[in-house]
Length: 494
Ligand SMILES: Cc1cc2nc3c(=O)[nH]c(=O)nc-3n(C[C@H](O)[C@H](O)[C@H](O)COP(=O)(O)OP(=O)(O)OC[C@H]3O[C@@H](n4cnc5c(N)ncnc54)[C@H](O)[C@@H]3O)c2cc1C
Image (cartoon, rainbow, N blue to C red):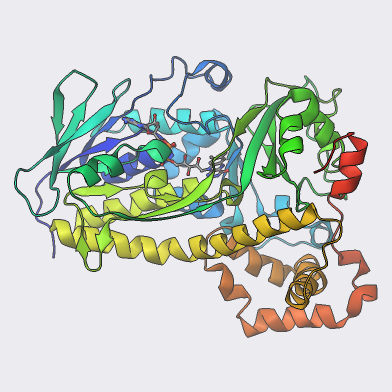
């Protein structure tokens, strides 16, 4: 159904990445939105001061490493170029395709114009938020109301399913805000599922543990120092008992994240303190040069975040919505393991899709159906594959603690395919690497590359050369095995 030209109003609850993205997308279609956030506004435009001072209790992950995948970069480049420019002016960086190329492919690399589609945006998250918030606040039709907490719903009386007319604000304030629709962008701690269930909505929910605890420390390059050159050892890696990554950020900053399996309690306790964190980083050859005290100094404490889970909430039951004039974006409805770096891309993309649907369709039930279908099409394939990978990673972390563990036949075959075929091919053949990167960046279902006969043929060709001829492109050791690291740090591994 084509919508008539009535101006519409929306309330967006949450001024995080998804909320601001949704506001900007809706405003670009002429919808007036009020964005409410429980936290105070930043007191400064300066990324360093905001990083040090902005109290942001509504976003527990604010001071953890963040990078925007190419899916979001392309969305910004093609639809919101002025916002992208603002982000870059504030200090966020474009990391081109070549940044992630294995050294074996870098030497003979000749860039293609289409490689721009593999660009990452990298920055401290605070810096990205500052730029997005400033840009949103400057758009006609967007009003941001900080320091204001949503506590309840305003509902049409006696409707068959909850029909949302607005929200109730602040404890005891008894204030109501009305609009044509409400968007929940209030993140991991959203009050809406509880409020809606109380009002009778039957919301189905799936969840699964990510199995890791995140530890992040930020560092600043000393005056005159630069980031270390690319060496042989990777600055991102998965050792089974520990995953790690260096994140280049803005204005001379970078961060290191260590993702430790929940069951590794000793390692978790060690890296919680700065000294232990740096000691582990010093054992990782691709991280060590970054945190060299002559090159960089830590910018403060180690931030830790646990209870990381994946979550998918369903606001449809079969073909029917369970609530009217209500939509959810970002972590409040779809949450993914942060290791994949997909949350911001998914959240902004949801806002962009939702804004298009609201501009095109007037009927509330048809809107809900179209939005649900779009999410299932655009995000679900990545979610499903992530669930499998997380379950495998949890099992792998358990086995890393058992010195007598002998993998079964299927596990040995899987490892062989990864280590002797896909891994070497991704380092020897740029066509294979590009195909795999499309899945990584959420540009196409990650399973497509490995079902493409051309790509499979190229992988098989590298595999058939055998380990001796593939020595130069074999898996590089990203760091010590568990027993070696634990012995070197005098950790008791149980
Ligand atoms: C450790 C960690 C690392 C991550 N790294 C990455 C990464 O590298 N790349 C990536 O793409 N994603 C990453 N993510 C995921 C990403 O942070 C989230 O997906 C993204 O922030 C979701 O945006 P959002 O707007 O839904 O929620 P948030 O950004 O969390 O914002 C929610 C907002 O709602 C407000 N709010 C909450 N309750 C209320 C209320 N009752 N009333 C009013 N306002 C309210 C909060 O103050 C906040 O501003 C990471 C996540 C974690 C946990």
